[in-house]
Length: 115
Image (cartoon, rainbow, N blue to C red; front, side, top):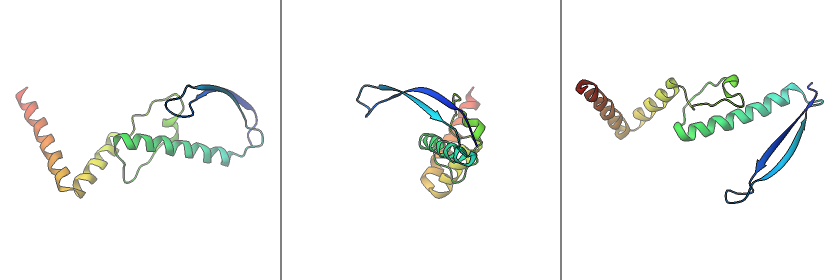
């Protein structure tokens, strides 16, 4: 069981066009089982990962490490291997995407030769 409390100041907008309103919130951990904390942390992690996927592509499968998503750290979204997997899956499923990817890679090769 956890014990203790932490106080935060947060700003909230009722909607994107409104003015922020500040709230002081105190989180009381007394009597909270570790399983509850794990569940809440997992929910937050999944929401954060999904935000990155919306920007960088949605993987078919993904492994994430909780420590990489610690508050105050920036996360680029997917690892290079995850991004590669998304591109390859899209290319396998869609002939036009495959052709576009091949063309882009060939253009990169041509640009390197010219340098």
